[in-house]
Length: 331
Figure 1 (cartoon, one colour):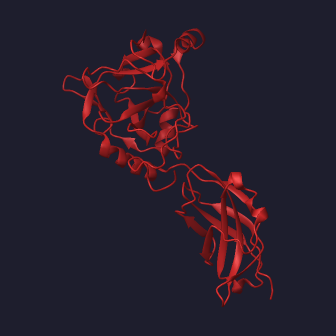
Figure 2: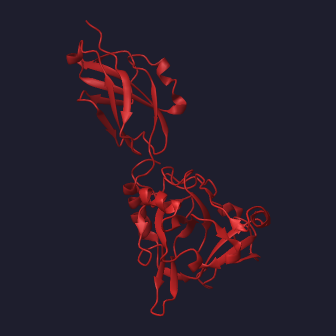
């Protein structure tokens, strides 16, 4: 019996965080005998696995032969922003239920995409469920070590400069490793209405009036919702001055929020023109501001509380098993 054609020139396209299209060329000989495709999908660290495959080793994905390109969607193995290898066999189902198969194709590599705005909107809706009531606040603050502020004054002309966001939070977040910004907090203590005196990030705190960063001159975006194997849940928001490079980045990738009407952090104008600010009580908000910030806009002082290193979210990994803050695609 003539051997089945081996897939050639494999091409991957239309890649999302949990799907892709695959296409290949085939010799027309024996093409009519093909009933199925065997697709072997591996995370890149296992890229040599195919070298040891035999024709009787079961593959991860068996698909009926359909016109190409074929879409692979929602496979349990696919996670966002992850490198994979893929190889393909053609197969012909025999009368006894076994398969005649071709040789494996070449192995090619590809990387899945970040969460789209559709997936981020799903995260946003899950975060809204637990946001709680809104509390008033009046300042943004940023904790760091004394050396950070000394360097800002001496080497950066008194300006805190944006830096690339780390890989904390959801693995599919489109801002991780890409968006440049400065992290701020705005959460207050329920009983005092003021920022807490403890911090994971350093004993020195820069504090400035909320209107210096958040006003009708800025846009607000939802970026992530996650936890770190604890009861605390975090939401990342981005404030970007309108028309800035950070604003243009976020417009293409993140759901925009109404400044005066959302469940996380609001800026509204009273009749006398004064701006009033509120934050969600039951979430820890991490606010990224996308432009440089001059220290002259606020004050730097030492906090009286403790430095709680265990609460740091630097490069923190999201709990993939939490039903509160995970969506059905990826981990």
